[in-house]
Length: 213
Image (cartoon, rainbow, N blue to C red; front, side):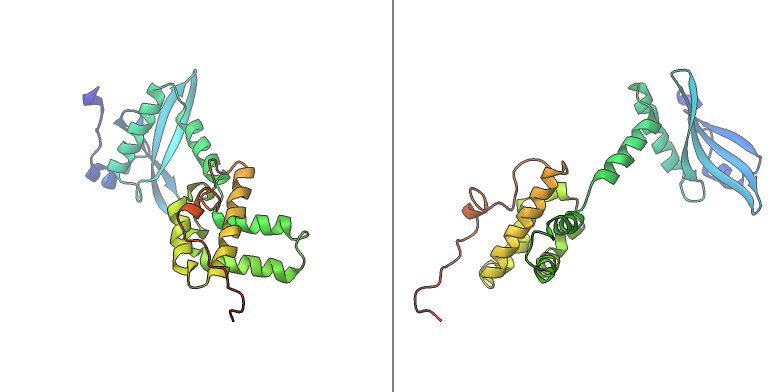
């Protein structure tokens, strides 16, 4: 089997001009075709599964190196050895990625769904402004990846300097993460919850004493 692999060289890939498929071994081919602009060279992975011939593209040979194509081919061969269809697995991974939503997307969706319940458009605007202003570090993060450390990195710098804003912000982050959980986008406990969680980590807000200005 080892002698069947790595038939091509980097120089061959660069200089070969014969139209057709050229085997590197292990189901990997350099496919050369003619185009209006000259020659097109791309990597293809040919395989048969359940009696059907299938083809997967690894990209242009001008972008994907021979070593990278071989690495990808090895990954696909490993999936085939486990009885998995590499194309189905690739589609499933794309679908899973598309299903993931960022914290910012969840925040906007929550605001949109709650807008009618809130007392005014101004309140909705303030709600988003507060979250967007302070949650920059997690705004583009997948909502299922946000943990306690991420929450603390946002709250700690303002917890004692602007406590009212910090407390309000914590509640809004908690609501966004609850929204994500309710829609199946995350699981487990809410890392922004106060009772039984952040209350044991952050100092309690000081209440104003009577007569204090």
